[in-house]
Amino acid sequence: MCHHRCVLHRTYDSQNCSIARTLEIVGERWTLLVLRDCFLGVRRFDDFQRDLGVARNVLADRLARLVDEGLLEKRRYQERPERFEYRLTDKGRDLWPILHAMASWGDEHAAPHGPPRLFLHRDCGGRISERRVCERCGAELEVRDVEVRDGPGLEAVA
Amino acid sequence: MCHHRCVLHRTYDSQNCSIARTLEIVGERWTLLVLRDCFLGVRRFDDFQRDLGVARNVLADRLARLVDEGLLEKRRYQERPERFEYRLTDKGRDLWPILHAMASWGDEHAAPHGPPRLFLHRDCGGRISERRVCERCGAELEVRDVEVRDGPGLEAVA
Image (cartoon, each protein chain N blue to C red):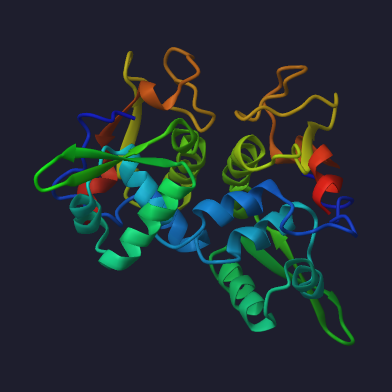
């Protein structure tokens, strides 16, 4: 973006901005980590809680908000006792580019032992570029095309 | 990503993750909005403060952290009295894909009156796709290639 000319519009309302609105929905502490877990296959309250180590009331609040916003769907998977799981909706799945961009930046700038996870094209095993294109076969990838493997940085610090 | 098989690694440390590390650096409240303003050309403390309406001590804290992390550079632009401005470093500029992904998601899901801002390819005026490719000429764009204009959603709510 231009660094010299585009100072903010004078009448600009700093909240009338798609970045600000996105952050209103997913910018609370823990929310993006909850969503990351959803993309990695976590669905159940106790699994989120164990993985994140977050207080149960905070987790319950974040999950309820994500359901309210239509990013997660709450489904009953057991009747007695009643048990629910949380799954990404299409709207939630559309957040993948944000998380992928965060993972790419972190791999580049905050992973001294190499990427903790590798994101690969499921069909051909190629690495996924920052623009979400397979570096081997050139396909434009969606989240369903992605496979996650342990990366070199995982063991290094664990 | 796989939704059925890739439940988190048992020994997984939920912080040994490039998304978690990125959020440790830019995930605090206000930080991504400060960075957004940087991309839009804001450089001076009072301009950030006026635009964001954030408390001065919070803003000072966020800017100092961003300088410490090497995302912003603090430069003196006036001697008497001494005045400083903040500019994105290369590491900071590498955050653009995250902000662009947030803007794209917000335009799609949280902009009922249309995008408040349009991001255009400076050379040809084409719209920029979610993968940061010019929809008119097909060029893969970097942030320096981008021009920002008011979008239809700006006036609608302002």
